[in-house]
Image (tube, rainbow, N blue to C red; front, side, top):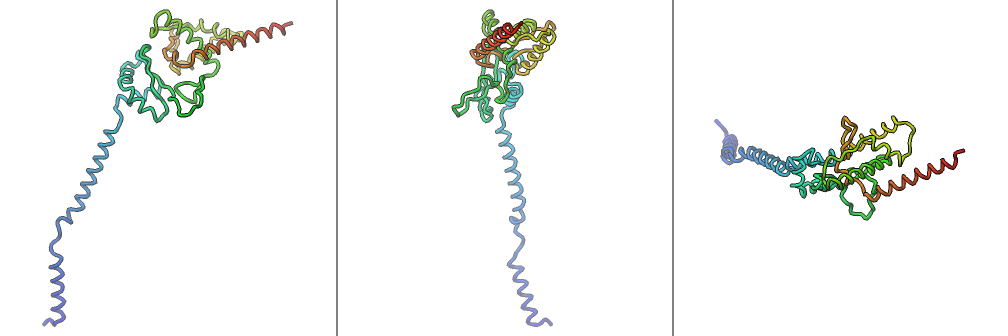
Length: 253
């Protein structure tokens, strides 16, 4: 027979079991609820990121501008029109990069330029407008000045924005000789001219030579550099060549 102590212990066990009661179903559901809430929050975050992304067409425009530096209506008409329509949003996208898109609708051109800084430091007139650290060397700048003269003359005859400004490589060689002097080798002069044209093609200023060795002058050349500075450069180089020729004449026996 169970003693008094055993009965007391048994009664205490029964009381504790009664106080605990059946398992709380809300406590069992709590982990599942928390998991569902976490999934919902993650889904909302993904949707927010997708909504915050820049429009696909605007991204294509910005990426092409950063890749090439310009958009021509004749070459990329859809992106060119998209850039014009969304110019304000495009420039908001480019602002953190200190770049700004500018439009020349007369010539069918959208191009990148360095956004004016907050400082009063003067801009380097010889720096390339598309890339802050990329500069044209003396021979490239000279060829730009010569090509620009051809381009402006073509627009004066055919009207601003008129395309098909063409020039033959053979026309450029004697022009460059006026300012750089002659090397004494026609083959070397032609090679130099073709190399410089190929370099300027990378800046979107000319096309590749066609079967007749003519290049098309692209409208971007109208915005590349200050025309007054280019003209001053031509005068300076011409004066330098004239002075060197005079020195050679005086030193000749």
